[in-house]
Image 1 (spheres, rainbow, N blue to C red):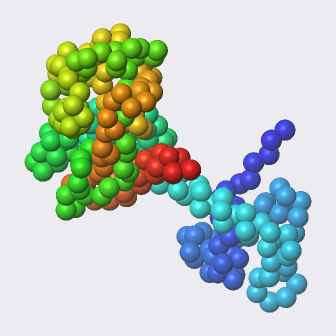
Image 2: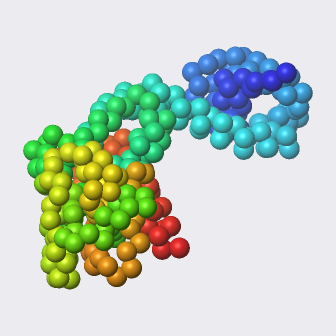
Image 3: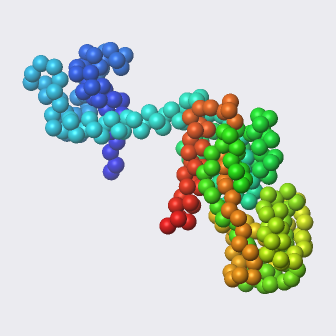
Length: 290
């Protein structure tokens, strides 16, 4: 049968050990000396171990007491952290987080899940759009934290990863062999002019077979082998595959994934979300370098 330590008694024990006496501990805990003494006795009885050496003046820990003190400090610290995060108003609120659609997967759902477990009383509202719109929204105060895909990083931003742009198509598809090369892109996609310029420089004819405002339309068309697309290597859709094209298509440039934070957005919650995002994309960069 599982047995549980009395955390109230454990707190009294740790306080007595740290202050050096029952009187000081009682004052710090806002309890009577007799209440603290009873809690210490109850703790010793529950463990069937002597924790304090009462033979001399003052309070001295036994060997068992010294060992419990180490465990007790950690247990109380964890208890206090849980209580603070679950009940303190400082751990309530809302964070407005903007991410371009093409880098939402696979990292952002994992980040949101980890953040929700750590801060269940905080709501993260995820907004997905293009880099230009996300930067305008954070400038206007409509978002607190954003990620962007850019070839440079503006003042106040942080580059958290550099990713290679690659060609993607349908699994087992042959659309990449067609000439003119059939492309599928959203109208406002940052990578669209980069791809067109790379093809022009390589002397490869192309046509915009799918010109849309919806990411799903691009994915459906490419997965049907009607066209090809370009995505960041870290964010290839599960419906698509990198194209092993040999030298039939030109290499594409790399881009930065940048993070920007609204200057007025401060506090431990957004600090924590930033660190989780940074770690998530850092793991990808480390895996790519390995």
